[in-house]
Length: 188
Image (cartoon, rainbow, N blue to C red; front, side, top):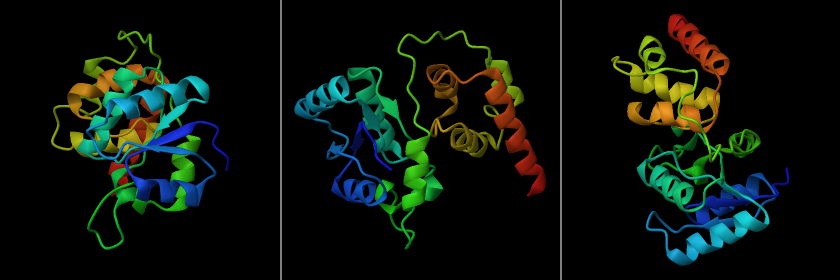
């Protein structure tokens, strides 16, 4: 699998995992304190070939993603579920621990947020409550599963509506994902 865009990862172990799974170039942020030079490299790469942000599904990874999104609008995003990034020994989490096929799958479901997205999408806050994605004891697990199904990553309750709008998730896509989550809950 050849990836035209340059993939932004956190460190050299992530680069090793990416190159093991696909043919791609990477830029490493070397942690969540992204330097101005790294931001300039990402912006330049975005203007030349495009960029896919592929960071770990943890707080530092989400912080890096948010900084890049703010400073270089229009970058693409790939996400992996937390369960797919846990080290074999259970100690550690990150893209570097993911299986090659999971990396390829994530990179085949890349999202480009609409920079000029409208926040008045068809999905309402009431829909999120009815779907038990906010204000329910199982909301966090349900949001994580929704993020997996829709390939939009993990998010907290406050950010979910914005993330759905940013990635232009339709009411139909949302509804189908919620039905799938409900069916999975019934089968447990």
